[in-house]
Image 1 (tube, rainbow, N blue to C red):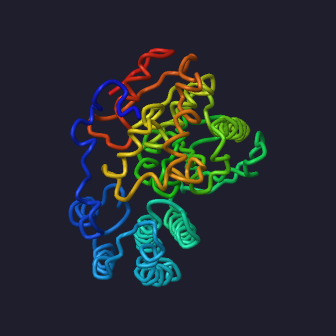
Image 2: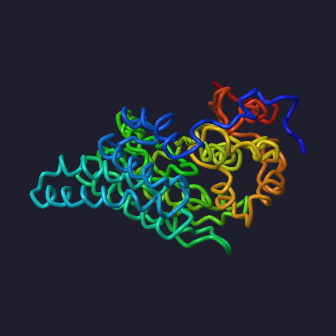
Image 3: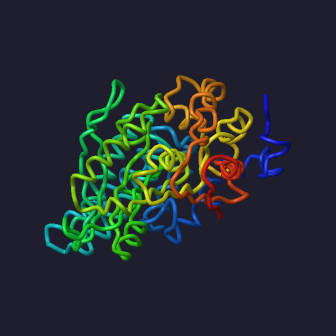
Length: 374
């Protein structure tokens, strides 16, 4: 088994270490999650510590340590139900600002409840509830986030018929004055209703946002098992965008995050003529699929074991299949994609990334069109 691309991984001794937060739900909360929750940053953006603290106290008391379990997910529902009652009362009183604040908090609770992957009916129920709360939170904005269902015109067997996306467009946009647009490509656990601040930043610059989920996750209709399914997905998305007339099709950028960065790199090659540029933030494109890497990744910084989610995301029947087959099936190097010319591509990552190895961003420098990196 090949343990590293060239000698040791850049991650160093941490590669073989198991992070403390994997010991228990108490360790996860106390050593990794409570602080970001207290300041409202990923993955707790839009949320409040006062909502999460009692949920995690209950999880700790009941010794519920498996984030993939229905017991973990269900523990969040009573708090969500209580806040929903208050939010609906405020909505009935037309106090939309306070109701919106509560709906954001509810959506954040449902987000963490359905982590790390939609592997059960209860997880799916939580995701549906998250979407409902989130759209309730945003619908009274001047420039609201709305859901659109794009016809998957270029689908094949294994693909679904429609592509659900979230769209936010400045009110000033029109057919006579289309606006630059960011296609925001989501990740393994961050889905469409998880991008409030990003859309704020884009809107402040006069840009539209089209948020698209990746194959094998959330509501994405693309065949998880087919490495070429995202190419058909983007064909349909770009066709729809062109027909809407609100998007400046000469100024479109794709930005992918974590698992989504893989697709941002791929689209930079496969649809280079449709894009002004692309950003791959934490892109795993080849070494990420290395069996040696995957066999250690569960001990790294992801809150729960990562490989069960990756196995389902890429459509494999077992974790062993993920280990043995994914590099041959999904590597952009093995597929020859990176040998081709690309649009302008910015790669962003850090030496301590234990999920998507920095080696992959470095590897891309050796192929095709010159890249930019930070």
